[in-house]
Image (cartoon, helix red, strand yellow):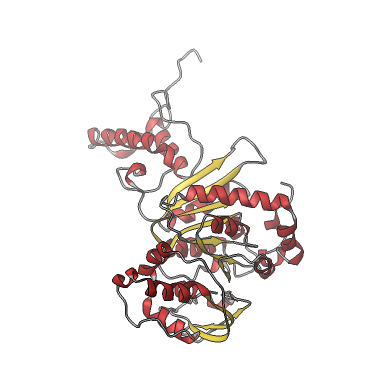
Length: 291
Length: 122
């Protein structure tokens, strides 16, 4: 991607009438948006009992993603900062309710009322400071904090994002974890530069039994929970058997930092949602002398 | 904006401790037909602040809701129909929402409330 819209202008100005019009005229944009929202709804994993839910669409724009929600029978409330985009949504006669608002100012919603939230290509806008009063970190915190509050217990939020670089992804993910969400990043088509899509899948409240880490320090990627718990146990046994030794001696050996350190670092990166190879008996093992 | 959304919205201004419910100033109210779905209503019912909901419905000119209900009312078809009508079919098209604590007006135009805050309110 040569030019990112985030770098050109603030969202309320970038999405003017001309840009908004594209969202009704370009069949390519419409198709991409529909696919993304379809996938987001799938990741939302709402109980399959046919009961319509009240969902939140953050950065709903012209309501393309909302249409997918309506097709699946759900009621939704959409929030966007661009008046032009909302006008297009009105023109398309979407079924959900629309709000003109800035997610970085927090969502003004009552606690615990929303069953699930989706967001298509919106949250990365929060990483930019478009006004002197904008501090990305605080805006992300306000957004995730209010999202966490308004979601019902166990509710999920699926946010499709285009982070500009690893730092941005980390910033977003860390802000989410900081307010209490558990979950991680799901990457579709990781090897294709065009089709690659990242979804933040966040669950409100403590992680469920299947994904939880016994020590209760919280948030981990879903796929790697098994490795992590075994890694934790090992750490613990080491600690207990050597408990009378001063801590520093344990860590600094002649040969560098050792297996514990590597495991700790790997776990940290896993929590951030990075791709980390599983822990095996070969992890951090010393090479033979002939190398 | 439907009353469903009104019942979820609260004022988000910095320093406001109880921004719910927003008072409605009515400019224009329209009715739009929506498919009836009892499951959705039953699912939503525990989440609705009933008193605020009844008051809001009265403000937009629908006074047929009972003042107090418990979940047993959900068995009654008649109640569900009224609930459905008030919750999903009444739209506030023009008017304003007013923060109960600070009196700040959030204008509603073409059915979209403008909830954008000024810099000093964040």
